[in-house]
Image (cartoon, rainbow, N blue to C red; front, side):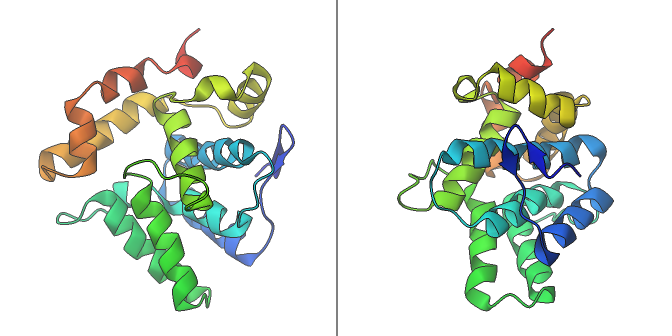
Amino acid sequence: MLVEVAGVRVPIGRAAEAARTVCVEYADDALYHHSVRSYFFGAAEARGLDFDHELFFVAAMLHDLALTPPFDSHTLAFEEAGGHLARVFTAGLGWPTERRDRVADLIVLHMRDDIAPEVDVESRLLQVGTSADVSGSGLEAFGFSFTDTLVRAYPRLGFARSFVRLFQDQAERKPGCAASELAAGEWAERTLSHPLDQG
């Protein structure tokens, strides 16, 4: 894994490497690259804000794993199932309960209403990172040099189309979940026309 892209670094340590390893093992390449890009977009958005790099990186690596067959729940929205997965994962790292709750909250909240950075900076960064990478929301704030370097390091690999299918599957099986609400609107069209996939 590249530890720096366009001046943005990933945290080094046992928790970060374990989260990356799990993501590589369970996500396909497109979903893994999305998870990494989400971290870089969010960390770049921080622009000097003080945030917990390790917590944010672990959440970014795990936030979509409940979309994969081994961790998919047929009763819980994927972000809620992902929060439970993160709590179990971080228990294995020996994280205290409060920190385990935090990483679960980040994963759940990335599919909820926007959060101001002064309220919860890590949750805000995950929302910004995932939105920029999935639907292109706020992408213009990053500049061509950054996005080009990031996509060269972690190509999209047909991510938009496969991700839309995952959300449509969630929507069909779990009516009323956040993915269902997005799939019912213009989200799919925005995702499939992501600027980074054009040209």
